[in-house]
Image (cartoon, rainbow, N blue to C red; front, side):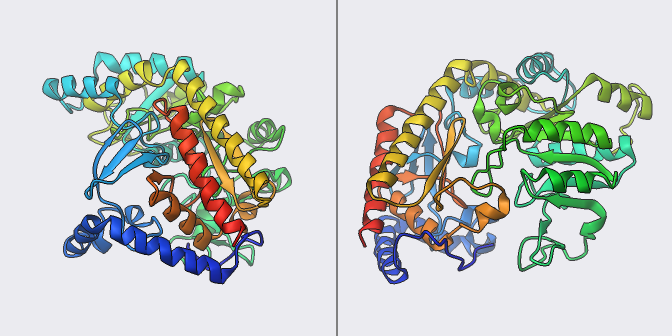
Length: 462
């Protein structure tokens, strides 16, 4: 929820920030009259002028309407071009319309889109994912939200337990189990200050603890009513939060001790490398979920699990049953079009070489940002996480979701985003995440560093 909360380390006066923001808004309006016209027309048929709510949440009076997206470049309806470090909030992590994906979908669309029957490519997907992530059995969904939902349902069916434990300020999709957050009074709420779903009894379906808080984790798991714990190995939606040393290993052992399955959501942390954070740090999840980027932007997601879980599913519900008793999957899940796109994206685009370049570009950017902060004596910091990094409005890295949110500054953040946008650079809305695709060049990174330098210098010297 957007609030007037300010970081104690804003580095600019309120009055000066308002002046600068007004200047950038006027510039944005002059540059984007076509987007404004489309936005005004869209009010008649799209709620608040966009097909989904998040498309309107860029901190501007209206969103940019895009004409074309290729590689790491965007062109809007006014002809303005942008270097894209948002990449569809990770959906286009390997660049817009990567060649291998384009070739695959162009061929496949003539051969069939969906039949509700398996294809030989599905076997190759299973082999590819098992080799990368170390889990032998896989299923396909349409979105990561959907994959997480199916995993929760399976965990509940196998354990007989009702609750899902998640981390405060995390995000795993629009799921009632993981939307609750810890309120100021310690009770569970659906976001601070309002309840999006007042009919849902949060206490009966969810437990929430702070990331990196092992004492709270053991206390909540000791109730032994949690079917599973779900977490990103690095929190990525609240201003990235890294795990303390030993935290994830202890999380694994506590889940085993208290009979809860461990679910690792790699949807964003796949940016750590060929097998995501799981392979890089030898995690041992019971389930792993992954979506967004794995088919070059074509909607598809997967979830993997151990052989022991596969055996338990078959023992509980019957091998090769005529009908799935748990209501898992959908008519379009695993369709031949999406599976083919996923196969060619993973094999030909999400390569070890690609990840090595992506991570090197992140380090180049993070080094440049840290040098800029030091040059102007601005007390902010940079979190590094695989191929992505995050500029934090605080002098140290956050320890948990609440710590990160307490230093969020929406007015400052949206100003800096607008400043970059007016100079032809786009980063992720909602926070300061910047993602490096394989097609990113040193020149692209240096352009972003230069814009941040100009922006931070102006703020610091105001």
